[in-house]
Amino acid sequence: MCGIVGIACLEIENIGKMIRRCLERLEYRGYDSAGIAVIKNGTLIVRKGRGKIAELNKRLKFDEIYGKVGIGHTRWATHGKPSDENAHPHTDCRDMIAVVHNGIISNYLELREKLESTGHVFRSETDTEVIAHLVEEHLRPGSEPLDAFRMAVSELCGTYAIGLITVLDPSKIFFARMTSPLIIGVGEGMNMIASDIPAVLEYTNRVIVLKDGEIGYITPTEIYIEREGRPVSWKERVRVISWSVDMASKGGYPHFMLKEIHEQPLALSNTLSGIEMENIRNICSLLAKSDRIFITGAGTSYHAGLVCDYVLTELAGADVTTFIASEYRKYINAVDERSVLIAISQSGETIDTLMAVRAFKERGCRVIAVSNVVDSTIPRESDMVVYTRAGPEIGVAATKTFTTQIMVLTIMSLTLAYMIERLREAEYRELIRQIRELPTVTESIIRMHEARCMILARYMKNRANAFYLGRGLGVPIAMEGALKLKEIAYIHAEAYPAGESKHGPIALVERDFPVFFVVLDDYYVEAIVGNVMEMRARDAYTIALAPRKYIYKFAKLCDYVIDMPNIDYRIAPIPYIVPLQLVAYYTSVMRGLDPDKPRNLAKTVTVE
Ligand code: G6P
Image (cartoon, rainbow, N blue to C red; front, side, top):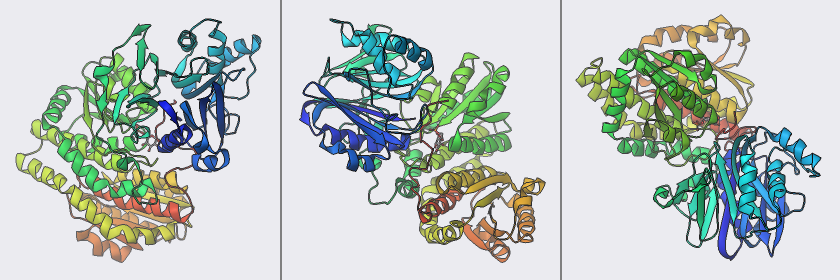
């Protein structure tokens, strides 16, 4: 879950600064240590250490490194704790080669043993360092570095996106990809490699998304890609990305997360205008013909899946099973050619979701991807795709990608229900009309409630625990609200169907214990009122998000209320999550934390 970057330019540039800026755009992938390696006058300069990029830049002066070719890395530790030694880039015994890597080399212990027995000396505990020594091992006098790199890569097992430079061929950056994401940024007089598109946007919006098994190199003017030993033509694979560099910067906001919460009206309206109904209808025809629908995702994307599950089951009467991607194995024997899998992943690269997609495809299952990143691996390996148009999301905690995922999934579910005549035309049209209003509705929720969410955050900042309770479609929203608070404010938060709270969780409730209630469906109002009373009787601090029409009822009962618009409950999950995102954000900030970079988390999880 690290981020890697490589830049090759024609002229000597302030390359350390360029790499540092690119790495900062990848810091959401990991931020426990970072480093840069540059070739200058035939020698390798390596600066690296534990800490965030901005702190390291002050200490190690990345910005003062000049050169034409360099690589950089921002780390999320897997093998070896965060330390100066374990920070990338890693070098060989003779400091001729430097390598950065994202992924896990699963056979690194065998390789390391073998290399140590032939005299290689290791300086870190990482799996990555074997790559530098392996290439060194294969470099014979007179041999080409590309051959040595190719041979080294052929010995690696596991997942990797690799960038490698060597003083023996100083104009090239060698790369290889297996499962971990890697793109090439195609520039003028410069080319780049990076883990993700936002890293290169300042320099180019033309990218090639590399595929598994591809290796090659870039120079300032040349791109070479091969697969199974044969050159691959790439010109037709260059994509022009519509994201701008401003979209990947904070634009005056203190944090990306706050900017991304505020961008939701725009993200929703862009997603809405980008939806091709023909595509949705084709997907619905496939769903209508299937015997069983599976839905999968990880983290926030799983919660979006639960929303879709509810609408598809309740409205379309479909046979739906939703599971956390890493748990796919249980379902393998229930999958066949008549099953469909909806795989939800904003990044399109989450390894757990990708593994589920691959396993299901092997059983003949058709796969529909919902993703925010064009050409990423999961959409590429799926049969059909719907893209959300949220723009780049940098904050680790997903916000605008969640609401846009729910938007496309809800449109899909409603369209299926209409196509199979479970939903009358008038009702379908009314629901679609309400969806079209969501950008405006969401905007007014932010405007009206941001200050109230801040007040609530003042209460939350001193709490150690919280419950989020809901019923029906309120449950996945409660789960997402709890996840947001847990991830970025480090407050233990759990979500339950409100009815279930009496079967255990209520034992923890004591004076001032915060309990959020997500009330979005008329059907459950009275039952939730009962649950609020139970919590009040135990002196809990009760907070309700409820439709305006019930607000007096809840205001009389609860310590704090946030009034939500009177909209159909099947559309309501989108606006309802917004105040919960804001509460989590302000609680994190008031606790002195950085909501964009929560400890131990990375935005895109590319290791199992
Ligand atoms: C990580 C992130 C979450 C995200 C999840 C799934 O855990 O921290 O915010 O929801 O991965 O990511 P995906 O890109 O597959 O939606």
